[in-house]
Image (cartoon, rainbow, N blue to C red):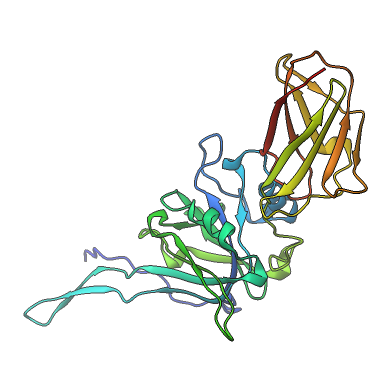
Length: 306
């Protein structure tokens, strides 16, 4: 007897499927800097060290972008579409859209500056990993059951909006998007909190980078004085380790290793870098490559004077 349909076994998860409501998401560009898909090779590779290396990656295409904790999160699929014929028979057409809505409060980092950054993702190709309210790590399973993939977001549907605070109501950012139509809910999996060496709900374990502005105050052939602030206007302090700074002589195509870095005792976020004598009019670039959550690509350029 010829059978043209195939069927799957229907036994459920013996231990139950214990994924909870998403509390935060980690945005992941579809491709890394080499053009390869941005994935994690194995479930065992989902570690604190591996993720934090992605959060602080020097190249943006290799970086993961965690969002703050959210409230009132929904992640639901609409009703499927069927065509009903005159006979009364029905035929499946397509699944409904699966849409995400969440709300980042001001307490959790929401503000107009963050809104602008989030909306820069509109029309891009990217996906997300989820962290639920009990700390489980959600992802999309690949066809071989090995690779940990982000859930694919429809970049054309991604848009965030600012909600003004009201009396007795907190303001914040509404995050809203749909996943790509070819995402199958049956491919969603999670790694239990008990099997992770980090807590995704903790900002010490899962964090985003701050953009910074480095501004020259003065310079000589042996000294450069700069101020460093976040784009929220907050002074960046405590960056006195020489290895946190990358100073480069653009004219000579050579790194300049500072002999010392001193922070001002009167002006928070102002630093004096000293180094061996350079040639007048040499061009330079300066980056803060601290491991303390500042974007290493934010660069100051200038010319050294006598």
